[in-house]
Length: 241
Image (cartoon, rainbow, N blue to C red; front, side):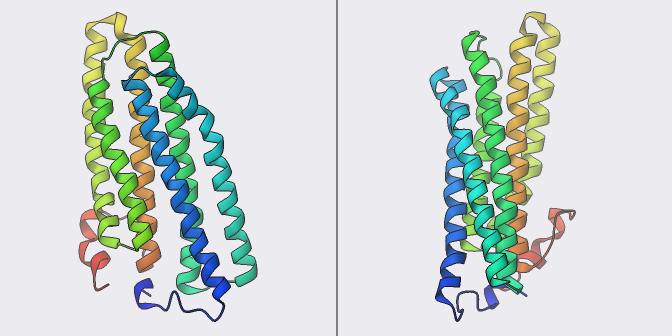
């Protein structure tokens, strides 16, 4: 059943409505923090700001704590309310989304740790252009997937899913370029490897944003599209809202 045709907000218990809305609100707050973590981690590298990188690493605990809180809230809703249909899909989607947001936080921490080492070693700026391009793309994917979740917007979610292939292509192109550079200058191996780890972490951020978008489609349409070609999803996902 399409969630938009279900009576999602008309429960006998107003408290149940409130609990469901709280789940979404807390997930969006976690998403906002995680998106900022990615932004700050990349900025710490591009600006050579080791203090900012350290703050990103330290803030990872806050991300983890938010996931634990959301999981606890979802567990209580499942135990007390025994939700069904679209309400059950919402709770399950929130649990899955919180897990992916936590993983994005982990990737942001990896970026910050590598940035910290590069900044402290004064290892130049080779690969910064590629980092900037891919980071902007994956941050947009994260932002759009969260917006799609908040609005139950399957068209926007589908756009995010389709963008993942482009990020993968950008990542592979960047890796080829950096590999060539290392082959031409052995002195660049160490710093370029650091950039490659950062790019890998950012590519994983894109993968997790893709997962978030897939959860939106599952939530709204009841469709599990994890192993489906995005190009085959248009009509089925969009449909009549």
